[in-house]
Length: 205
Image (cartoon, rainbow, N blue to C red; front, side, top):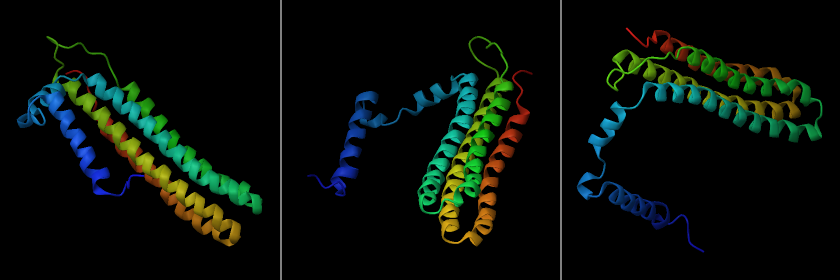
């Protein structure tokens, strides 16, 4: 069986495959990355693509973070409740905190969706207001989505520790719950900044 820790397996082979793929797609070693083509592609992307991608990332990454957190804290809670059933009712608040992360993303996605307006390109080109609006909604969605992704992971891990600690010593529940509340507040920072970033959206002059 091949040793997956050997540098040939995890470095040289992937780099060689990537190099061959670039040679096939670009055609010349001197044009490893065609920056002119990438810049042309970037300049001609529709602002509605960026706006839709921002909305998708806002809700998608938030739900991913919430699901990850519920998976972590829920598995620990159910496992520990087998031996100590009394922890089930109190520690459900950890699952609620994780679910709130997904709600943050849904709220921001709805707000961003309402800011998308229809404008027609002039000679196939969108004006600077439309492009700036698309970038603003994209940045807002990325900010909210990744903030809630990390927040969900944080709340899930702390909630898991809270359930296991409560099973051993019930006096630790309130103390660790304070840490969990501060972890849950991290998602609000992304929501606030995301709303502020999208506040100046203006699709036309």
